[in-house]
Length: 440
Image (cartoon, rainbow, N blue to C red; front, side, top):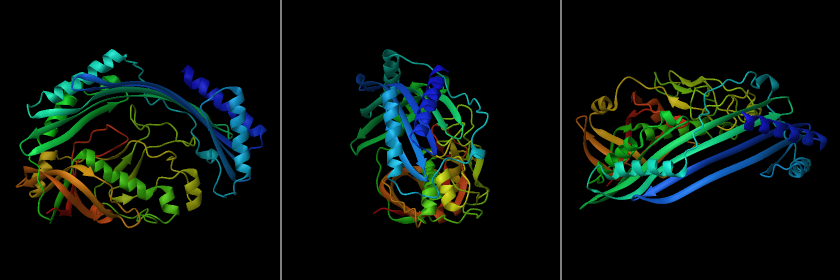
C-alpha cells in the first residue's frame, strides 16, 4: 500500500544519512497509526478521541558502540539532525561486542501476506452507537446492575516499516477493532464489578457488542455475595483470561535479558521438562488475522511458528540478536516480544474441569503482582468462586493464591477447550493440582 511504500522510502533516506555521518551499521523503524475510541457511560458519551501518530527511530553502530535517536518530524532537515545526533551518541558510548544488526542470514526473504489489514474507518456516530449498544446490553441483564464504568468501541490502523544497512527493507499494515463493557452490580451485601471484551483485526470477526455487554453484566451479577474463605490447600482452576498470565510469567523467565543477567529460574533449562507431560505452548507469528502476527520481528528477522514448550519440554528461549550473542545462541525472531503465544487447548470444557476438580477454587480475577522471576515464587491476590462437588457454590474475594511457578507448571492437571484468541498471549482454562489459598 502507498503508506508502506512511503515509509520504506523514508527509512532508506535516513539510512543514507546515517552512513554519511560515519555509521558502520544502521537500522530504521517507521511507525504510523490512526484510530478512534468512543466511550459511553450510563448512556451518555463520556469520551470521543481520534488519534494520528507517527514516529521514526534510528539506531546506529560505530565500532560496536550504539547510538539511537527518534523523531516525529519527517522533514529532510529533521532526518539529517536525527542521523547526526544518533552518530554523535554512538561516538560517546562504550563499545559492546554483542552490539550490531541481526545476522543477514536470519533476515526475512519473501514477506508473506498475513491478512492483517482490514480498513474500516467507522465514523464517530457509528462508534458511539456500538459502545452504547454494548453498555445497554450489560445494564439490561439484571435490575441489580446499578452503575457502570462504561461501554467502549475502538478501531486502529497502523503501518510498520523497517530497513537496515544489510539491505533489508519491509513493511506491512494492520488493523484492530475492540468492544468492551464493565458494569457494577449491587445488593444489600455490597457491590461487585466485572467486564468482558472482544478484539479482532477484522471488524467482521468482532463479537456482537450486545453479546459482549451481556457477558459483562452476567459476570458482574454472579459475583454478588462474595466472601473470604479459610486458608487451605486445594486444586485451583484458572479461567482462560487469567490463565494467560501464567504464560506471561513464562515469557518473562525465558526472555534474553533475564537469562544473560542470571535473573531467571529457567536459566539453562532449555531441553528440560518443566511442564506437565502433554502441555504444549505454541507461538504462531504467521497466523492469518492474528492480533500478534508479524512477518518479521523488530530487527527484520524472519518469524516462524514454533512450540516454545512441546509435550512439557522447554524447547528454547525468546531472544533478539543482542541477547542471543550474549548467550552464544541465535535470534529466535523475538525482538519486540512474542507473537500469538498460546497454550494448546485440551478436550474438556470448563464444566468438565470443575467436575474433575471436585472441591477447590475457580479464579476469575487476579490482583496485584507478586511474582519473583529469579526464584519463581508466586503470590497474587485473587477473586473467583468456591467449588464443591464439581459445582460452583458461592463467590469468594479477599484471598491470596500462592505457590512456585516451577511446581505450578509441573502440576498442571488438565487444560480446557475454551481458548479464545482475543490478544497476543492467550490460554484456555488451566487446572493446577494444588496451591495454597490464604483467606481468613
